[in-house]
Length: 116
Image (cartoon, rainbow, N blue to C red; front, top):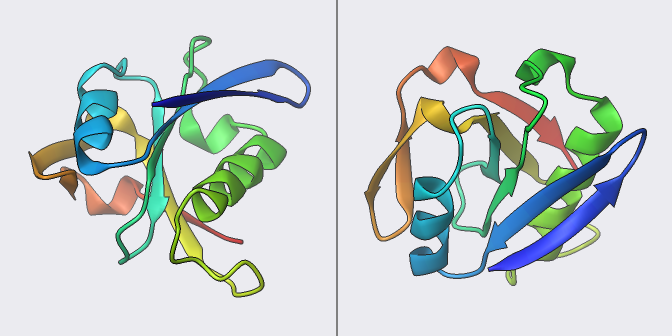
């Protein structure tokens, strides 16, 4: 797993899973308030934003959300950097592992999107 710090108004730590085994371990080891990111309808790395301050998803700084989405795009091999992609995100407690790194949502309506 790769760890990165994002500095906006605060320091935010993220972890990126680079294969399905790392993706599953990342989800399993995350706290319920952490925020999960992934390409919409594509296979990609999983990224988890550590949400130690327990900030609601809709209150997270937009710059941090955009940076996390860009990191998902940058760490997914098949992404063409000048193309636009939708990245989905939600609290980690809204996803359930289905095997081999795939997940399902417990509440589809709480999944947000950002285009990068």
